[in-house]
Length: 503
Image (tube, rainbow, N blue to C red):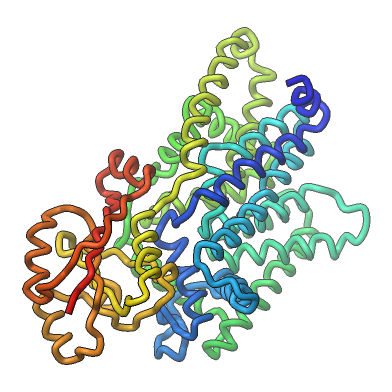
C-alpha cells in the first residue's frame, strides 16, 4: 500500500496505465462473443468471408449489389488481419478473436493515456489522475474497449488530434497540424459521424482565430478522407465517396424507421451509465467549462446536439464522445468545487459521494469486464463446428417475428441459401419441406431451436417434415445475457437447443 501511494503521488500515469492493462486483459481473455449485431456481423463476418472467397453480406460489386453505406476501411483492416492469420496457420475462430480483442485493447490505452495528459495540460495533476482513473476502470470501459464497435474504435483517432491541437509545437508547425488533420481523417473512415467532431475541432480553432492551424488541420483531414474513402470507393464503385453518399441517403430516408426517442434520451443515458450522483457532476462540469475549454467542448457538443436532434437514436451512437464528457466533466467539476463555498464546507459529503460511486462502479466492472455475451449463439456454432458429419443447418424460430443471425464465423462455413430460417431466406415448415424435395442435396442435418417458448409444439411441427430428429445439446446464454433480459425482456437472449436430423 505504501508503494501504491508513492506511485499515485509521483507516477500516477504508470499506476493508471497498469490498472487499465489489467482490466482490459481480463476482457481480452474472458469477454468472448459480441455485444451487438453491428460489432460482429458488419465487421468480423464480412472480413472473414472475404478471406474465405465468400461475400457473406453481399457488399462486393461481384455480388451484383450497389453500395450499401459501409466504410471499407475498418472492415478491410480486419480482412488484412484474418488473411495474415490464415497465412501463418491460425484457423481457430476463438484464437482469432483473442488476437483481435488484444489489438483493440491496446488501441484503447491511447484514450487513457492522452485523457490523462490533456487534463494535466489544461488543469492539474490531481484532476489528471481522476480523469485517467475513470477512463481506465469505468465499469463499461474495458468491455467496450475489446468490442468491434466503430463508435468506440474511432475514439483514439479523435483524442490524438485533440491532444495535438491543444499543444504548441516547438518546430515543424505546418507538418504538426497537417498530421493532426490526417489522424482525424482516419476517424471519419472508421465512423462517418466523426465528421461532426472533426468539424467541431476546426470550428473551435477558427473561433479562437487560429487561422493557420485551422487551415492546415482541415487540409490534412480532407486529404485523408479523399485518399482513403474517396480512392477506395473510386476503385471499387467507379466514383469517390459512393459509400458515404449511400450512408447519408439511407439514414435520411429511414430516419423514422428505427428506434426513435425524445431529444433528451441521450442525457438520460449519460446520467445512467456514468452512475449518479457523479454523472450529474460530470455533465455539470462539461457544460460549465464550455467557454474556458472550447476546443474540448465544442466538438462533443456539436456531436451530441446532432444526435439529440436526429430521430434515429441508439445508445451506441453517442459512445464516441463519452470519454470527452468524462474528461471535460472532471476538469469543469473540479474547477467548480475549488471555488465553491458550499462544497468546501461539505468535503465529507463530497467524499462520501465518491466512495459510494467507486463502490457502485466496482460491482459491474468486475462482472461486465469478463462477460461472455451472445454466448448461446456463438457456442452453438462452435459446437456444430466440432461435428465431422455436419453439412447444413436450419434455425427454427417460429415463435418470433424477426430472426437471429447465426454467427457463421465460429462455424467456419458460409451459406448463400443455407436453409437458415431468417438469414438469407425465411421458410415455413411446408415451404422448407417442398424446397428440400426439389434439392435433396441441400438437406440440412442439424437444427437449432432458439428459446423454450412453445418448444414442444414447435418440435412437433418440425417433425412433420423431419420425423427423425435426435436431441444433442442445450447451450445456455451467458450470465450478462440473462441479466439484461431480466432488466428488459425486449433483449431476449435465447437458449439454443441443438438436434441432429437423421435420415
